[in-house]
Length: 107
Image (cartoon, rainbow, N blue to C red):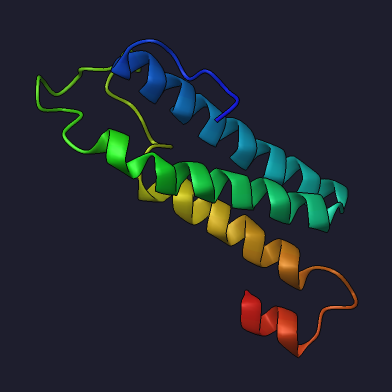
């Protein structure tokens, strides 16, 4: 990876969580602007960050319930943010007027 994600595991998790949120929000903004192709790409990046972050998230609360700096609220680290990215990607695939059976099948 080109991006330095921090020196400690906590910093790495925080940077990864921040990037997940950024890509998901960027995808939603692009979707609302009608740039569906870029919205799909942003969702793909967010989903990839969710997939790559699973190894880092295993056992993250072993030292205590609020081990990270988010105050115990980390809604974008699990299935909630991932499902949001999948939903935006599906909507972006179905939104263009040229959407056909292939795009419906992909969504």
